[in-house]
Image 1 (tube, helix red, strand yellow):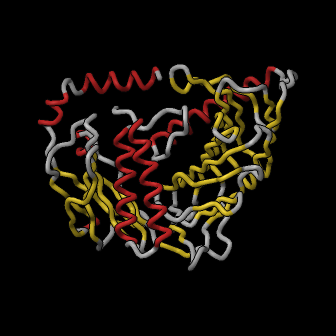
Image 2 (image 1 turned 90 degrees about the horizontal axis):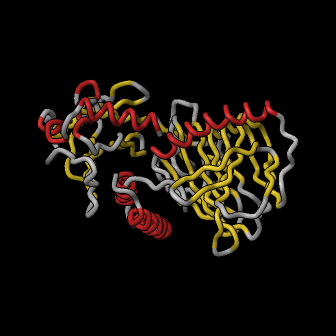
Image 3 (image 1 turned 90 degrees about the vertical axis):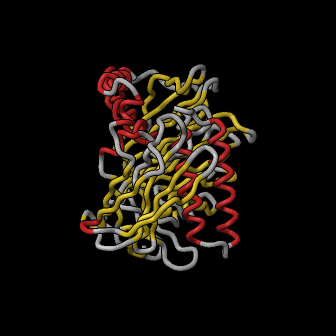
Length: 372
C-alpha cells in the first residue's frame, strides 16, 4: 500500500489537475494489431464504449499499414466516471481486445491488440502448468462456500480451441466433496467453460498468456482434499474468520490478512508444488515449525502478494469478502460478454442461458463494485 500511495502522489505532482491533463490530450485512440508479435496486414477493428448505463459498439475501421488503426473518440474519458473505451478485433475465429481506456493519459500510448493463430486441441485436451491457485472459503447456505481461482499459462505461440461438440482444451479436478460446482467466469477470452461432475472443463479459447477460471462450489464440511496435479507455481488457501480451528497439510501458515475493514482471513500458502494433494482437517495445527520456515513463508508471501495484485487487475470476479473490483472493470466484462454473444448469435439455447446467467452475475457484482 505505501508504494501505491507513493505512485499516486507522484502522478498528482506530474499532472496538477485533471482538466489540464485533458486539455493536453487529443481525443484520438491510436492502436496497432499484432499477430504473434507481427503487425497484421488486414482485419476490422471495433471500438466499444461502456458507461454505467449502457455498453456497445460505436465505430469500426480497417487495419492499415503496419497493423495500425485509429479512432476519434466522441469525448475524452473522465477518470472515475465509469466510462470506458476499448477496441477489439476478430482473428482466426477468436475475438481479442486491448486494455480498457478510462483516463486521457492512456491516449498517449499505442493501444495494442495482440492476436494469435488458432489451433485445435487434441481429444482430451492439453496439460497446462497452473501458475496460481487461490481457494477462498467462507460460511455459506450449505455449510461452506468456496470460490476457487485457477490461473494457467499457455506457453505456446497459438490460441488453442476445442474440437467439435463438447470437446475440451483443458481439464482440471476439483475436490471430490464439491457440491453444485458452477463456473463464474473464464478469461481473458470467454467461452463454454463448464463443470462435469467435479472436473473443470475448459472449452473456451486458451491464449498464449495467463488464462483464469473462477469456480464456486459448496462443502458440507471444511474437511476436504484439494488435488493439485502437475505443476503449481503459487497456491494459497484463505478461510474467512470467525472459523473453527483447522490444519492444512501441505501448505505453510501465514499471518491473517484483512481484505477489507472488518473482514479478515486465515491463510496458508505454498509454491513450486508438483503432483500434491492439500488436506484440510479440523483441529489445531502442530507447533513444530522452526525459524527457517518463517523465512520461507515470508518469501512465499511476497510472491503470492504480487500474484494477487496482478490477478485483481485482471477481470476476475471477487469472492465474497474479497477486495471489490472497480466499476469500469465490471462494465468492460459486460461489454465483452455482449460482444461474444452477438458474434455467436442466438441459435444455441444453452449458450443463451449461459449468457443470461453470466450477465446477471456481472450486474450483481456491478451493484457492489467500487467507483474508483
